[in-house]
Image (tube, rainbow, N blue to C red; front, side, top):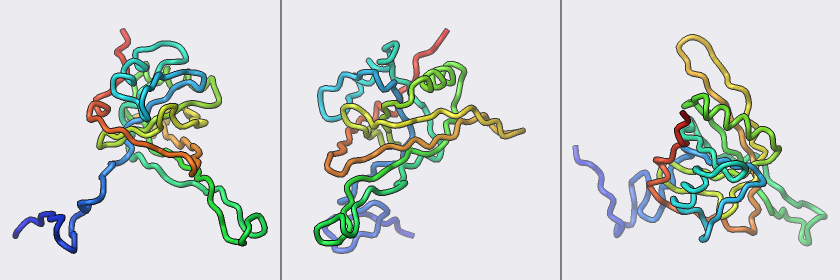
Length: 194
């Protein structure tokens, strides 16, 4: 049996990710910050060094790293639309999409759990999403989200504690959503607490 090889000159591509498609991966980490916090970002997306400064910071400017999301998905929840008589030609206009980061936080320790619960003191947070391929989404200022942190679920014998998440945010279609890539994002962890 011969392995299939991708040849971008061929008319037909028979591969999971064609030559012209970027494999962004799936959501595997998240960064959360208090809504009033500031992460200094020079470019369109945070660099690894800028994120590391945020992780080492304190107070509202501190970034909390969700080191591993299991079953992480970025899904559309609803669309914001104008229809019928609200548009000039009666056709539907879509101007916004409500997205959500869903999954479970499973690699928990007491320091991370305490940091997450402290973030519940504010109604809104800033969130950046890191994918399994090292892409970061959220732009300069992160997605604004009401990222409620529910209590830890303990599902019985043989299972680890987990925190189920469903963090919605609004994506305005007239704004860009750049992605930056650095494999170093995949190694981000919270500082050890002694």
